Image (cartoon, rainbow, N blue to C red; front, top):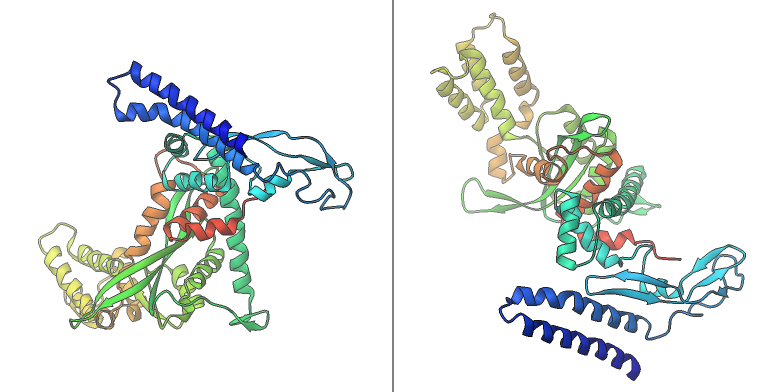
Amino acid sequence: MAERVSEVAGLFAQMESELVAWREAHPEATLDEIAAQVTPRRRQVMGALLAKLALQQGNGYALEGLRCEVCGTALAYKGNPAREVLLVEGEGPLARAYDHCPHCARGFFPLDRRLGLVQRSWTPETIAKALRLAVDIPSYRRAAESFEALTQVPLSKSSLQGLVQEYGGRLVEQEAQQAEALCALPAGEWDGRPLPCPPAAGETMAVSLDGVMMNVRGEGWKEAKIAALSVVEQQEGSPEPEVQLTEHSYCAGLWDAATFGRQQWAEAWRRGLPRARCVVAVSDGAAWIWALVITFFAPCVQIIDWWHAVQRVWAIAFAVYGQGTPLAAPWGARLKALLWAGDLRGLVHELRAHWPRGRELPDGLRQALGYLFRQRRRMRYPLYRQAGYPIGSGTVEAGCKVVVQERLVQRGMRWSRSGAQALLALRCALLSGRWDVTWQSLAPAQVT
């Protein structure tokens, strides 16, 4: 042990001597310039120290026995090949025992398994830090450059993209299996036992569904579907409680409606939504959205997003008087006030006063009226406000931007389906506040 300490101490003394000499030659250097000289030398010393500590209990020779774990054949010791290990703290070679099975033709590095090393030069913790930047920064190249600048660990764009594909793909498979398992169960059962649903994140929870377009290589612009789940918090003290949505989580992917339905239900299950006292679904009027809401969340409070409804009101005003005309704005504001008051009957009567019965309806006016009629039971806005329910789907619309567009819909970006899905899975984990738990579940493959 004393010899090991003296070796590291010798490296530190050498580093100190070199830095003192450099400082004497550069008396005007700033603190950042001094630090730039310290960092690479410090990493060299720390790499040596890490290697010494890793080998303190031996190099792995006979650490796990001398027989193959697959076939039981006696292993042959083949020496101590070194591998380069890259960590944020330092880097350097690590020489450890290598055993070989003549029957299976497989090699084993017992110490690598004990230390949690993977097939690559990076440790799992280093990979997790790199992936987080790749998920957060809207460019693999910039993310790799940022990672190298922050950690001094070399990393290329292609290597970072490969890590996202590997670990994000693993997460995609994991979540698909979870979703399939949940939706294949008899109601409320798991192997004949009550399904262990987590506690609800809040007494009242909201769910909103939507879609956003992204460019898929070889296919053009395709819709990525997204679900946003939130806790509804109400602040009393007025006839209409103030509503705030918190603790958002997301799932998103290039799925058809049926697959998306299973995925968003799995996310709802992770949040404990089935155990919430009240579930509020707020979305636009797309038929596929409400089909999923009824399938997975009924009975629940169903609300058409206020601003989507208002758009139809203005479509009526513009169809009758023309956009930009003096009469359109005040009449549209009156229709909006009737909608806010939940008086759809009065809104229709108001329209009839301006567009007599029997007069042919233009397409835009017919579509807007049809929308309001079909969704009328989801537009009881005064009741929703008094109950303290959200009436806007801004959470999922913000999710479309934050989860998908800010990372995957930048100028010139085109994605393979597998690459986009891998990145979206990791990004949802990050933005849903479960990055650490998700990374633990991915269980990086260790060296065998």
